[in-house]
Image (cartoon, rainbow, N blue to C red; front, side, top):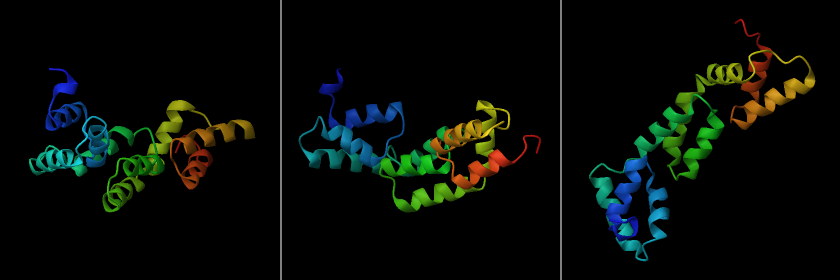
Length: 149
């Protein structure tokens, strides 16, 4: 059966089988194919009641997949873009803050492995870490701490 011939619930389940989706993501994706928003809402309500749709699993999935490569800022932005409520985002961010320096240090070590020799290299390394979502304070600490610590 082709994707277009599936029921709304069937399409939602097919999307959820690939990866965790937030309710807002599924609403957006399903609305493109389904003209009746009430049918989309009913299908998502039923999936949520049965435990197929769970915002906390979405948060856990993103944190698990992304925390080793990006900073709190990037993870916060991704969770907000998926429509996760502010309280869950705050809890996830708070749990990551304690390990932010160590995670940034590991990302830096994999990419560069050596302290910058001049201002140009320092700026390049700082931009790299900032683009990954690490805060300015954490970037400064990583670049100012010798690698042997």
